[in-house]
Image 1 (cartoon, one colour):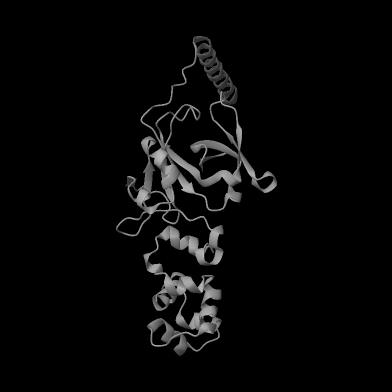
Image 2 (cartoon, one colour; image 1 turned 120 degrees about the vertical axis):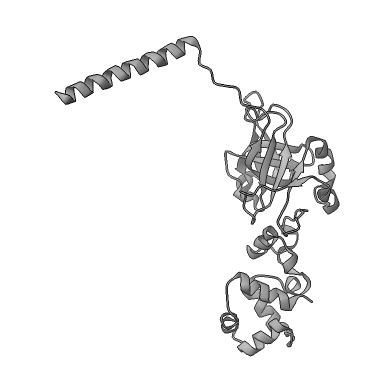
Length: 270
């Protein structure tokens, strides 16, 4: 049973003293201390009091070693996303962590995409993916990197690596933002999304490349949503080189501006 260590860990993460929590729960400090030190066993009323205070299910407090959670998993728990509380409504993803208990960023390369359709929820499949870290990203969020295929998202080139943040609540999908949308039929696609989940139960997906038509995807078909953060590419974007006439116009405008500045300056000196 992990109750003793869990309530101590939860208290310290909130920066509270034993007196603070004992007062709020309307129990003696000595009783509270006994629970944390393992010399007293809580009854059902005490378990319910701790569960209500921390918004964590009794099963989680007793059966789950919270010290083994990654920072992302812990932050999700503290936001109220407890699997024992919300059951099937909670979107749980398979993930991996490094030796310091930090979330890895798994790479889903082009050859791994086919296996992702059946292995996305399989911890063993996810564990076999290559992993890396980006130190400038938040440790309280979950990221994954997907390799793009094709030209539908040009000017982001074919073969680029797109890093995205896991989206727990699909109602928070922002219109006009880029997302990796994973469905069984379409697989992994990177698109600009229009959120119509509340009214119509669907997303409208757009490509950056205008030759591709937008299309709908029903929310019931979606398995995962990942919000675009950045991308890495070995290709430089095509340079924007002006044609001769445009270049001559710009040079002429600059020359005229410099002449006008000199005229104004000379008048100010007179």
